[in-house]
Length: 253
Image (tube, rainbow, N blue to C red; front, side, top):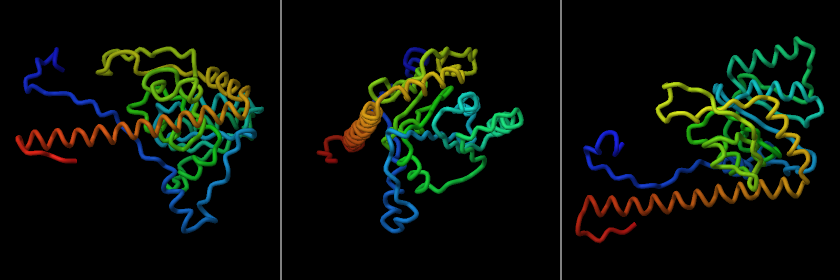
């Protein structure tokens, strides 16, 4: 902006980072009132379960995820919550082609309440986020907050949340040609084929339960560190604004 538009308003940029709400908080609060419905079962790092939700987004890459699991009946179970037509068509195409996908619990157009959503994220071992693209990456950040093992694309901004110490990266992806439709330029969308997703799941299965747990815990720790940084930065920014709006006044937080 400064270079291209000569910063006509003398704008200053103050870095604050960003953060995401923890989806498990509502589940834990609801469990205090109704423990039968909302209490989460202990997460199992040995007998793995996987989870994925994309809502209406096609950029979450649910189609390739379904293609992966349909080709690997030996994989652990995965629960998928999806509301886009392409994913639904893919699921039923696999069934028509004789691939029953008994290890896939597919929920099309099903809405779950925020406490139930948080409970599911607390219970699952791993959350698969093979995103083609992300804006900020709230879904990945929520997965970190929940303490699950996160599998995501080795491309920005996805790999700015997760690395091999705090999750598992889907490597080998290539950047898509986006032409001039993306203002940020190239390198914002990635081809994440189902074979690459399957390869990454195989790597997860090769880890020990302790390794899976450690990586997930590292991801959760980084989420809380980022949240603390954001809160501190916003508190400082508020003080700066008060000083700007009331010059000469001793502003306090």
